[in-house]
Image (cartoon, rainbow, N blue to C red; front, side, top):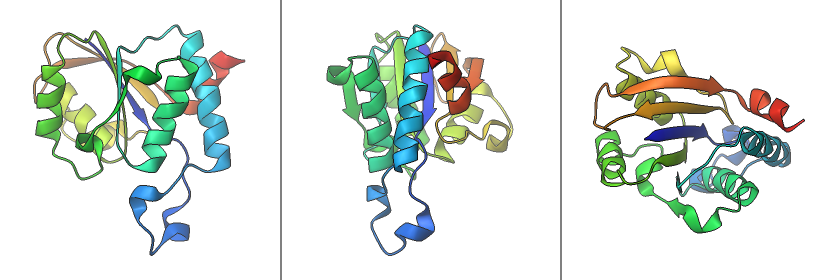
Length: 167
């Protein structure tokens, strides 16, 4: 299985959104523009996603929509509470294991959950080793997914790197 992990794009700063529901914090206009370029870069890399799973939080779901639109893949886009910032990673991995027929999955979510997931699947001691910048994408190769070391990191690119492929 190819497991792609994408952190949402640049969002409105938490301080500017204080007192409001954080799940509704959107991408900035620049964040939308950067993510669209990164998505074009993903297409230029000839990536393929059988399914796109996204956090229902607005900044992540908007990121996933931008990618799905670039790939004409909207019907393969699903929201999952298991990708919310405080969701249980063991349950997420169990859910991914149930999708074993999917050859290529894209997860769109948040930090620090994504780096913790990476560390868990790669057998790293600390999630800090894999801190993902906004708009970063990585690819894991997994023969059989389970909670614990089971993956190999193929690559990790920042949004800026992805955008360069679109030029």
